[in-house]
Length: 129
Image (cartoon, rainbow, N blue to C red):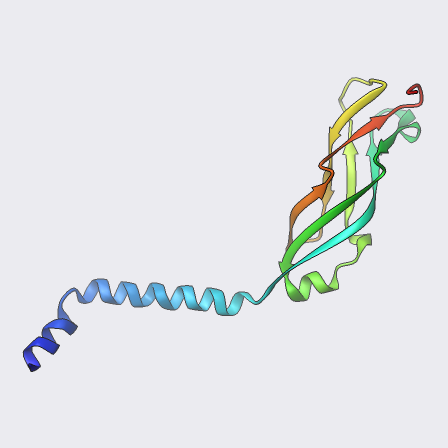
């Protein structure tokens, strides 16, 4: 009986040590990462950015978007809408009366962008109906 227990403990000792090390690593990652949180910011304004001088005549349609962020709970709880900047950058794009453009969302470090709704807007110029 004692030989069986000793044999079970010693056989494949290297694999058992590696498995134990991986288990400790996974546990510590989950334990120390802290709780995650998701937060949604509604009605954030979209700013149109262009290299041309007449960028002030352009506006986004829709002009307000919803942004959802994820991060550790402490960081997400401290966020406010002023730290999130949503832009439609049309620099280097040929002007058109109505142009669809993907949104760029600048967010603080420590959080990740889950989604921006809508993900693109229509940039409307002054000659659009």
